[in-house]
Structure formats: C-alpha cells, structure tokens
Amino acid sequence: MAMRLDKYLTETGAGTRSEVKKLIRAGQVTINGEIAGKPEQKVSEKTDVVCLRGKHLTYRQYEYYLYHKPAGCVTATEDNLHRTVMEDLPDPVRKDLFPVGRLDLDTEGLLLITNDGAMAHALLSPARHVPKTYLARVAGRVTDADVNLFQNGVDIGEERLTRPAKLEILSAGETSEILLTITEGKFHQVKRMFHAAGKEVTYLKRVRMGPLALPDTLAPGEYRALTEDELGELRKVTGLTGAADR
Ligand code: URA
Image (cartoon, rainbow, N blue to C red; front, side, top):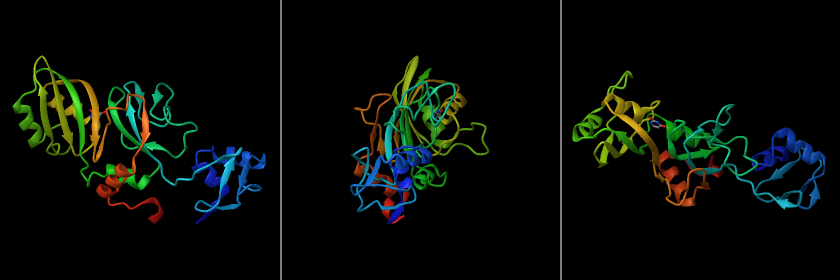
C-alpha cells in the first residue's frame, strides 16, 4: 500500500510532521537512492527503500514495548512535575505511542506501551476481563478471611462489589506478601481492596497482564519490544489480527 512520505517518516519515529517536512525539503531523505522532493510523494512501505541521512528506515505500523515502570514515574505521555513512562523509550519516541492503562505513581511493574489503539481498547475493555496480577506487601497479617473476602467481592465504594479476585498469600506476618489477580481495573483498585479489608498496601508491583509476564531480566526503567510469541498471545486474547490485516 502506498502512503505519503511525511506520514511514513513520522511513523518510523523520524520526527513530527513539521520536522519531517523540513528534513525532506533539506534533501536529507532518499527513496530508492533518489533524493525525495515532496512530503506528499507516495512511498510503498513494502517495496521502497527510504533512508534518512543515509540510514535505512524500517517501517512498522504498530510498535509494542514491554516496560518495567519504576516507582516515581507517572503513567502519562507528558507531565510537568514527574518523569513519564515515555522517557526511557528509544529516541526519538514515536509521537503516537501511549501506555495501555495506568499504574499509580508509586506502583512498579509491567506496562505495555504501544500505538495500537484497537489492541489497547480490547485489553482495557471491562467486558473482556483480562487478568492482571500484582505482587504486594501489605502492612498487617493477610489471612484466609481476606482470601474469601476477595473471592466473594469487596465493597470499594463503587456501584458493585469487585469481581472475584484470587488472593495468594506468599508470607503472612507483621508485613505480608501476596499475589492478587484481578480482572478489572478500577482506580487504585488493589489499594482500595486492601483498605476495605482494613489493611494498607505498602508496596505494589504488577507482574502480569493477560498473557504478558514481567521478565526477571527487565530492571525498573528498562523496556524491550514484545516478541512475536508475546504478540501472538495478545492477538489471541483480544481476537485481533496482525496489522497488515486491519
Ligand atoms: N491497583 C492500585 O491500587 N494501584 C495500581 O497502580 C494498580 C492497581
């Protein structure tokens, strides 16, 4: 399929529409070895070789990154006060990338960052009940009564009780360590569920979202592209096909 050269360049992360127009006008872009003349010139993302300052660009309609969000970093594309989850991504960051869902400022862990709106929508859809698993440290002793409470649904001040959630106690004591799997994503949900059980979450990390697991090898602040297998699993749970078919 042919597309405008300026759109192509923007989608490979070469810059904003106005930046790439300047690059084209400055003669820094070639198509199959010929200097490109106009932003509206058509290129085929399948067959044309486009270079910026001699460097071959690879076009991908959609990008998917698995990011290990550190604490103290805000889940937004821009913020005046805090670092954002976009700032560790490869430079220049494609302008259409965004985080899928939200983790609190002090929450760590797995965050998918993509420009695939349909995929994000499907993963966040309340109807789809995509499971998310959190590792938490909780002040106070977490008990089997909490396991039952979370299984049956908790009143966190919403219209309905929370959906059944699976609580696994890893260790219980003055501070307890747990895994909690929920299938919805209400604001501050894990903290509010424990609050409703009379306990406070002191540390929170997301370790799974649907078929994606946070790899041990990914340190806080690090990201990597999704593997083809991971992408295939995501497509399976969302019922979406590959980019070329949409
Ligand atoms: N639940 C919370 O309370 N906070 C998060 O960041 C994610 C889930």
